[in-house]
Image 1: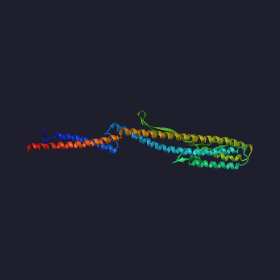
Image 2: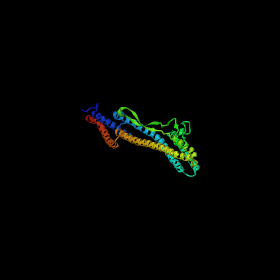
Image 3: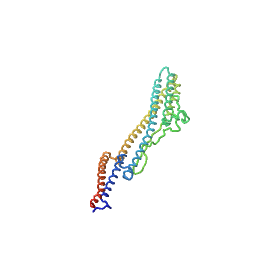
Image 4: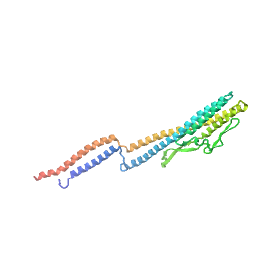
Length: 313
């Protein structure tokens, strides 16, 4: 039955066209944004998970940037310690040369004092952005209680630092963890070192070297003790440089791991919410064809009542 009041064919064609237009709008949105899950209404589970993962990715990136500052502080301290280590080796070589040497003690003493000045300069410059990991700020102050003392036999007793005699430690945040369903942070321990008291020890040895200016038995005894003391302090300096190098390497390894973790998280997020552009392009073409056909079908359905007029002619 045909009716001029109700055009069922047109209604069906219009419903189909509306559905196609809705799908077309969704596809165009995916193509323009590159996302198949843009909000919670698209896929609530994927959206919730992706938002959490994006938060973790952002946190890891920020932590990685913070680790760069810490690494630079450690690297600067390590460079300073290694430079002082080289100067300390020269210091030891000078004292070794002085053993049993005839004359030239004054020149050696001057060389030792000059090496100490270079150590002091290096120590004062071994900070990064105000971060002092070698107690450089304590050098030459009252914080070094009981400055290094050298006996008449060249034995050095190191002074102690009232702030960090054994070297303070700091916890450096390296990442976050959701193990066991609980949010928390991970960290590693990085040690500060008291290189200032060692530089002060070399200074005391250089100052006491004047006692070895002659070739007396007491002078020879002092040189022998000073040699042993310098070697001991050199070993402590080397140990500090080594530990700083290990800490720097640990930070670098952690940064490499964080970079890989962020890449994996971002890849996982993309797999959940990113649109497949090849698929969307194919769907767009198909929907455009369907839209044209539905429009033509609606046009045909709307023209059907016109045929009823021929019955009244």
